[in-house]
Length: 74
Image (cartoon, rainbow, N blue to C red; front, side, top):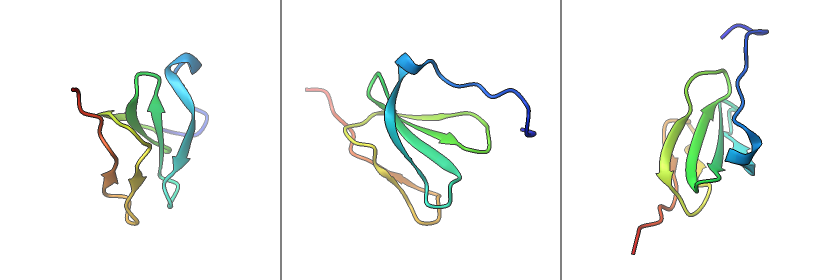
């Protein structure tokens, strides 16, 4: 996505204000209002929703893996 192009941000009601950037700054990790873990590429592109999560998790040093605690029903 070129600089100055359109940037789309989820409505505030769908996102929690807490989150963190990957060590290299390439991704932003947050929890949605629905309680799912969402990873957003900072350079643009589609968000990846990893489903229900208890915590924000972490991204590996090389940025290739995501670790988090998943909440299981029951």
